[in-house]
Length: 187
Image (cartoon, rainbow, N blue to C red):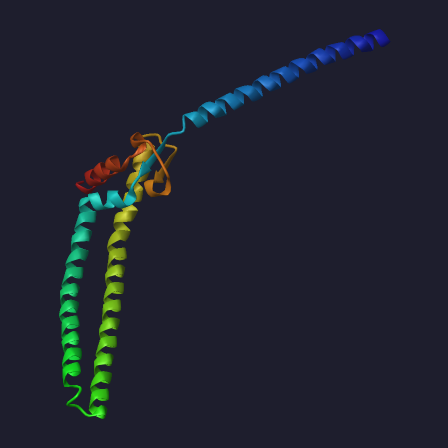
């Protein structure tokens, strides 16, 4: 009976060693497959800001914003010049005015200056809001194009170029994204 048990244990031991060997082989094969899969990961980069600026939609947006900015800038430069002249005039005439009249004029000019500063700030906020409103549909479409380029090229990930320290030039898909964006815009 002991001999029979010993043979059974020996047989179990061999079967167990075979099972362990198969398990180890499967693990190694799985690890090798994962390693190959990791090596095969395809990653690209896109400079989103550059891509948007390079599209016709982005250029149209920039031109529209620049036009609005230039119009406001000219108006504000004129008003700033007028305020400076008023301060200079007050400075020249201050010896001719009574203290009360001078204080009143200075107060009025200060109120005008504060009103002007508020208008400049409001104008900047308006232009920024307009930029966001114009940029939103372009950025949404850009995301869709990047997703299409990623799927078509079998990319695992596409990163914003500004978020990485270094990347091979061959990984830069910015031009491809711009071309695809323009191609879909013409349809």
